[in-house]
Length: 132
Image (cartoon, rainbow, N blue to C red; front, side, top):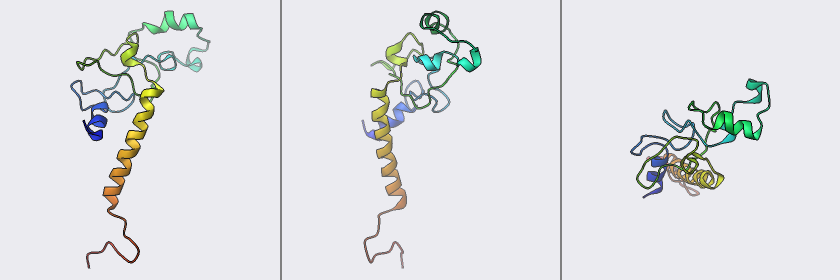
């Protein structure tokens, strides 16, 4: 699978039509396994949420996360393209640095390729891009 196809798949060109990059597109995971995403802010709650309370009161809530971890790449689907958008399915819904970091590299490379083709070849000394 080419890099472009992999990027397209991650961003929603897949059997679920789901972006596995949180916050990208119209359809992305909303029950991300991430404490900062799944528990409301102290500025909203006006109280501290302890570890046990965070698990008991917030972990199994059916509602979408109150916060969005924009750009986080979740684990994604299993080998059969099944995906369960459930916080307790951490293998599929947890965003990780080890998953997200290579994606930054991939998108950087694709951006440089796209920029190169959009701008055209760089003229060498004494050449121009004109068609005269």
